[in-house]
Amino acid sequence: MPATAAPTVSAVPNALGRFGKFGGRFVPETLMFALDELDREFRTAWADPAFTGEFHRILTEYVGRPSRLYFAERLTKEAGGARIFLKREDLNHTGAHKINNAIGQAMLTRRMGKKRVIAETGAGMHGVATATAAALFGLDCRVYMGVEDIRRQELNVFRMRAMGTEVFPVESGSKTLKDATNEAMREWMSTVEGTHYIIGSVVGPHPFPMMVREFQSVIGIETKQQCLDQIGRLPDAVVACVGGGSNAAGIFYPFVDDSDVSLIGVEAGGHSPAAGQHASTLSFGAPGVLHGSYSYVLQDDDGQTADVHSVSAGLDYPGVGPEHSYWKDAGRVRYTSVSDQEALDAFHLCGRLEGILPALETAHAVVETMREAARRGKDEVVVLCFSGRGDKDCAEVARVTAKK
Image 1 (spheres, rainbow, N blue to C red):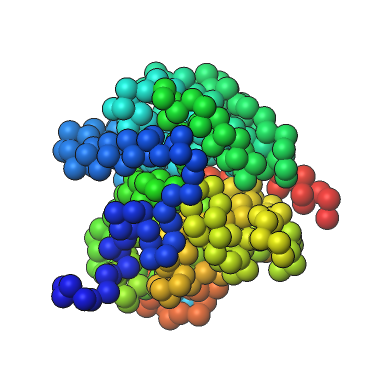
Image 2 (image 1 turned 135 degrees about the horizontal axis):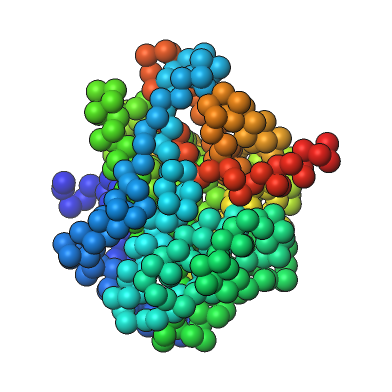
């Protein structure tokens, strides 16, 4: 490549953690040493065959990878167009894609000689994954969780506590994921010498967006090979839900230089496009700083972080990963949104047609997958990143449905 040529969309971030103009570090000085240490340790570990070999061994023997690429015959028939395949991250140990990153960061924690981890969680799946990894490696663990999400995700709270993790209720703000992240970052500033913060998505200051993407890229790497093995070529489109964006980054990243493969991210449309009634950051947000990174953020007229809403606790977040912001502006990924009601309907549709209950986060992507398949011919293929199972959401779906 000539020195003056623009980098491909996969050739990011740069040494400063910038994805184009997005990313970087916007944190207090007290965290800079820890972030430098983490960046150095991750890069060294990721180039170390012993580390990556153990990482992939654990993903195989403990997590259950590779996850299946499943032909959803009845969803395909219902859509009436392209063939739909599900990348079954719900079949992983703990029930979602979150365990891939949690295992990787727990291994880094051990490598750095730290004995304790903290995390934030919304839907609870990252909290469960972190609790699982902490138990596996003998680490002390605290998970910050908004009290509204504790109410919505009672099953996952029980699972975390059963594995020895302290679940710390967050009462401030909207009592959801943004507020849990605020509290976790505050705690990390005072405990950074002996504690590692396992951020659960491709958000936060550098190197977290890059590092989480790399740990989650196993999803896309497997998907490419499985498509070649099962259908003889790459898919025509890949669809994933986007909150912070880790499952989407994980499956999109290995495809970003494959220009014939359409990439579609699905955000939470909530009740309506009105301010405070959705969590569609890339559709309605503007560039700003949130949780240590420059990215698209939902903001009010004064530039303050806006209130958001989604029936899905895991998408109920006013920001998004900087690489997604970069992909949006580069035109590589198309981002759209799906309403609460559409996601609830897809939850039931997927259950009835395939005998698989999706997480409410995943249900948003089911909606767009059906739309995309219907627009395409029967000889085409759409892959859905089936990011998590719906057990955790059954009580909330029943509650919300009963109110209607």
